[in-house]
Image 1: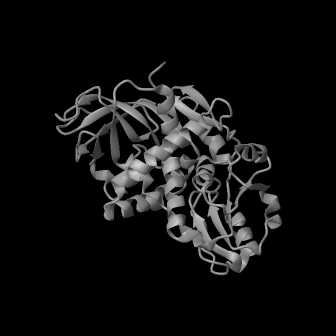
Image 2: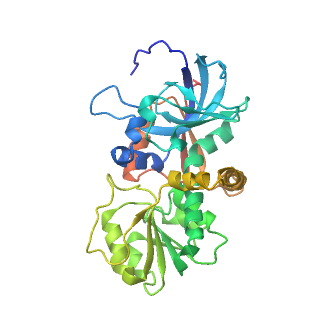
Image 3: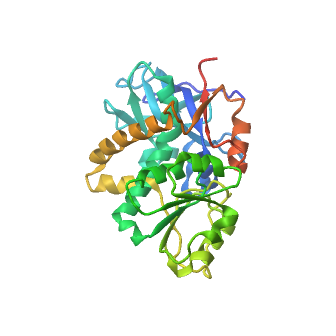
Length: 345
């Protein structure tokens, strides 16, 4: 659907979106769209609709900001669309913040756009579009657990183990001798076992086969209320910590259940972890460490000898509804990474 565009005002830029990625992370944005404010970032023009955000690259094709010339490429948060008008503030040689009024009140990480070097590398652009938001969540979640001495866990149980954020967490915990146990669907079990980053893999129906006597940290990527209750009832007082990282299988926040055995779930929000580094003056050193380790992770993902994922390239946005449906109902092949090229058509 085409919508009319308004002329730019002074202080605004218009970008043409080049490439975006869709993952189960986008389902989390939709599920928590009202409660966290994701729907406010790109307000829909039609009542009852929302613009689902996605990560990717864009080129500035019109600028009313002297410091940002046309042709500048940026990486950041965009709607699933072809163009976006923005109001850059806090402009530096490396980045700017979209200061549009409707974007205030959301964590800065969602409003920050990194200025990219010229000469795009489509393959690396696709991998970063797919994994930057996911792996930084994996990475900061592992940091969060590490800073708390892993709650003295004797095992980690990670649900939705086939999701990119889940196996990113397992990868980030690879230097920890504590066993990493993946929970997944029967359909995805072989894929998860083939990753090699989990010490054991169980399908959801086999949850009760996991040792309930060991102190356990549950890392919840599914957000499924029924599974959540089963985990608490199985581990009970041996559940040391319940960390809710994402929601691949639900349509809302998990319901609060006062009768649930074990600790209350704690929602992990990567943006707050990043804010804590910034408040402590540690954000730059964190990002240096993160970018080094992200490169190692992406090289492992795309290792041609034994890749964890295959890029699935789409031309334009026509396939987006089908991909979103598959991500939501869990029918999407976890070994594929869906990237949408909006300019090479």
